[in-house]
Image (cartoon, rainbow, N blue to C red):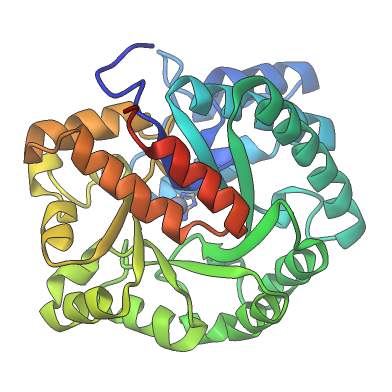
Length: 331
Ligand code: ADE
Ligand code: ZN
């Protein structure tokens, strides 16, 4: 791997751990467990899907071979090695109790211990810091969102620092999930919600009002409502923008058509992430390269965006200070 931005230290706030699994990793696990997952792969070995709904189905099919804490330990180690190689120094990954023991708290503790183990190894060997955002999955429904919230609240601490919601944004309304977010907020967790990806500006307004999040996953469709853009800028709401994901899923035609630059020019706190990189044929350096080409963004622009991300990270003050320090260019 080599690219013009590889050496630039980066902060990533929006990465789904299972969504970062390389297809070869999932194929290997499927072979070990004797599961035929050939339908989810293309002839050239990538993930096969057409559109958002099928993406979610293929994603969940891939997760069926992640069956034990040891599988998640290996996955976490592989993902963090990949991120560190790309120049990421701090990453927040979404972790789903639904895929780690089905929402059972005892099982979740075992999975989390394995993930924390791999994170400690990555910190020592690769100098990358992981924090976890426990996530509920919207299309599993509000009742099933309670268990992940309880898992998050019960294991909040050094590694679990946030709570969020992912999945199909067209299902239900944010307020249906308010109990889960209240539970996580009371445990002191940072809050973020996927909105304004498949839902329009109203989905962003609802997530802010009903779930009282400080960050929005994606949020890019706020651009369709100038008053909302002004509100985001004024309140300092942070958007976890994943341009390559939006382009791969057909939300925008290409880098130049993506609203991230217009949002930034309007004073919105944008940050940059990859979402589910192997599904979307991207990595963080491809994101930066695409944006540099489309908008003439330089290393200084990206460092400013990474400072915004570090300021918005769900971490303790000492970690934030250390990350901010590492972002500074050498004198
Ligand atoms: N889960 C994984 N990736 C997602 C995305 N882009 N939107 C909603 N849920 C997701
Ligand atoms: Zn996402």
